[in-house]
Image 1 (tube, rainbow, N blue to C red):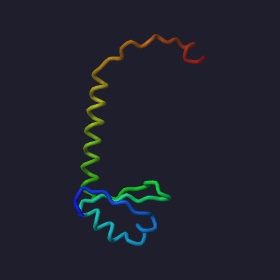
Image 2: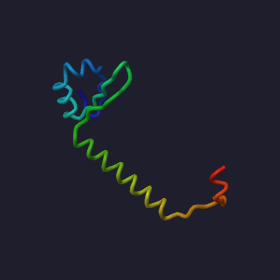
Image 3: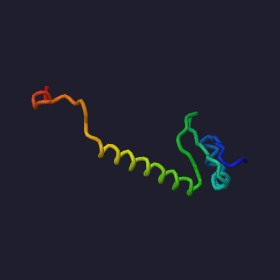
Image 4: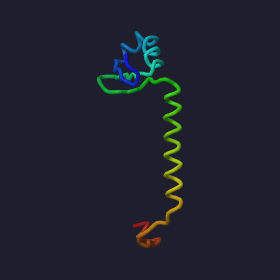
Amino acid sequence: MEAGMVKTVSAAQANREFSKLMQIAEAGEEVVVTSRGKPKVKIVRADDTDSEMERRQKAFDELTRRLNSQTAQNLPRATRDDMYD
C-alpha cells in the first residue's frame, strides 16, 4: 500500500488483525478503527504522532505569543452589577 493513505477497519477486524494493522501503520499508512460505523481511534506510526504534536505545540505557542502581544480593543466597560444580572 502507498504511504500516506488511510485504511478503515471495524473494531472487530482490528481485534483480529492487530499485528497486521501495526505493520501497516509502521509503513506510514493511517488506520482508522470504527465502531458502529463511526471513527473512534486512529493508529499511526509513532514518529508521525511526535511530529504532529510538535506542529500543534508550535501553532499554540505562536497563537499565545500573538494574543499576548495585542491589547483588547472595543470592549465595553462592565460593572460588578452587570456581571451578576
